[in-house]
Image (cartoon, rainbow, N blue to C red; front, side, top):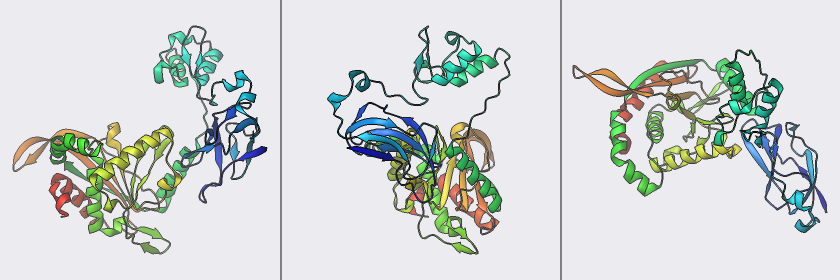
Length: 383
């Protein structure tokens, strides 16, 4: 029986998607639940599995097509059996629209886009150092090589749906919120000492490394409980005070910045938080985060320090009203008890919506975060 493969019902907040890579070719046999194609929305990449065993007899949707819920993209014939598929089709390699590397005549592995640019511009790929996995030559490597020879090249690349959505939300945030940022600095020695003392025992018991993000989340939760307006949001002329703490954790991914949510973070242990963050990071890299994991949130934490940032003014993630920014830890000279000493210091930034949060609450909340980190026992004793 010939059945239609259609775009699944997209979530209410997502109107359309873009077809990315077909993992199977027309003429190949596929098994039930095998991924046929990836669909990119403005939040995540979704996998579309085969509904039944059968032969993929026709592909209608091409990579790059913009599609909506229910749109026809392929046909699958469930009467086709594996033995009925031509050997060359059954053994055909899975081809991604832009991801499969090609081998040049000299044996150099290059991505298709890199090979095309090199061919169009007469570049010898054997003279280009590859920065991709396994030494594969990327398009950027070819362009950089050409730029080094004095070439002046412009490249126009469409934004991904995620990048466009991030741009829209950041612009929306700046246009609708009265954003103000307050700064402070924290002596990281106490939490660094705590981590150094217990990291091996922690990892052995919980199966995950002890990082700093979980401690920052715990410190932020302590401050939000003291100053709940930072956990609130604006809805028209109303202020909505949330009776729960859903903390967004900014995570970098190959497709751009995503902010998965720690639901009910107030009920999570430090080990729970570390496990969830590690899982978010892995699945963000693989594009496996679910849409429901990226929606909502009452407060966010972002760590620009992983990239070396010393200071920044993070932008609020609507409809939230505040966000905490972490930065790089650097040894600096500070004064303690009248003496100049060297301490590992980090600048903290708290951006907040001044429409509902006064400077007093913002400053005191950031001080509460600083105090909790400089005396981690406060987190254990709920002080």
